[in-house]
Length: 187
Image 1: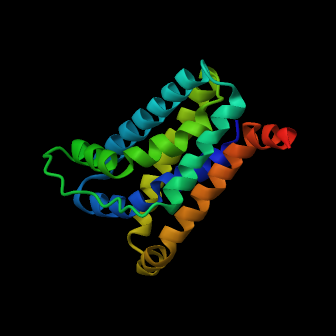
Image 2 (image 1 turned 90 degrees about the horizontal axis):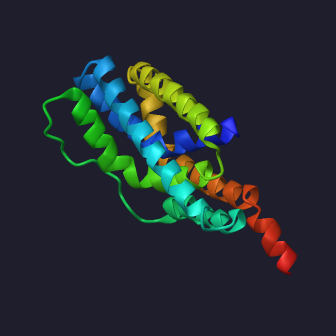
């Protein structure tokens, strides 16, 4: 299991949501935001894993490497993932619903190819790792929210950074799955 890839994937998928986290943390208690965020991240990560396992039953690994196109597509598509206005009364539900609205598609598309070849034991370790990253991210974002310079820099370059990371994840999936090697042997 590649923890660097998991970390980059987590950051790429959540980079735009970190700005929304700043707003949620401004309105709600840290604990409530963290609980909603953790539930949703782990829910979407588990869905990605289960979908990937179902696909792996029917297709060879190198074919599944074509799923690397999903993060690359997410990087170059012209969509805007702005959150709609949420009207939930519970801060946990508000965080969960906001995350689902903003990041569900990205999470499923980006995590699926990264998690597809993990055993259930390795997935459990990856889920624990991502849960820890999520908790740390909420705490860090809370602190960063107080630094205006950081906020301006991320607003200016965050989109480009996210796209570069998505493309890198997609290319890694092509390589790691054996897809590139398989295509080269056909030539």
